[in-house]
Length: 140
Image 1 (cartoon, rainbow, N blue to C red):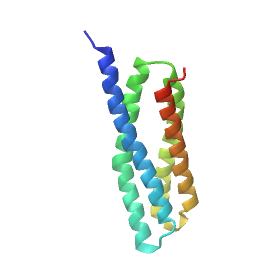
Image 2: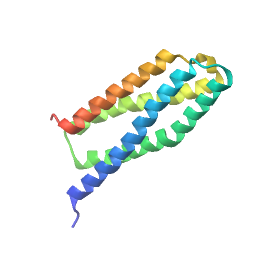
Image 3: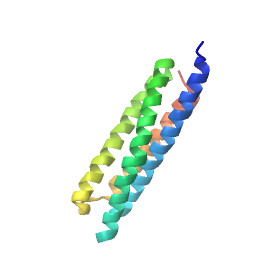
Image 4: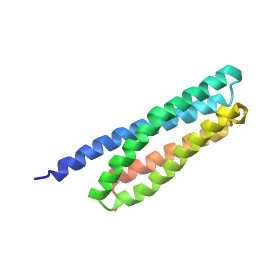
């Protein structure tokens, strides 16, 4: 017999682990790219390369784990998870936007704007807070 409560708990553990890795990487990358906007030459290029590597390893793996285990939870639980899913889709947009900005900065490092990356950092932080509130408070 399947222990559904235990399965849900383990899915939540791996889902949260993915969220921590994913959001942590997005916040670090946004901060790093805001610093790159103020740097010149080799320092700027090095920050962009590091941001790209972090994105490819931690950002993508964290996002995949989050989405995979989130889908499992959506199949097992209903209600507030649907509202949370909308916020996660917005978060995926910022994930994609950071990816595109990293690629653009590799080709044109002078195109970096500290303000843009600080705003992305703020939006990701606000989305994280809203998602955590839905997950913990389960308002409906």
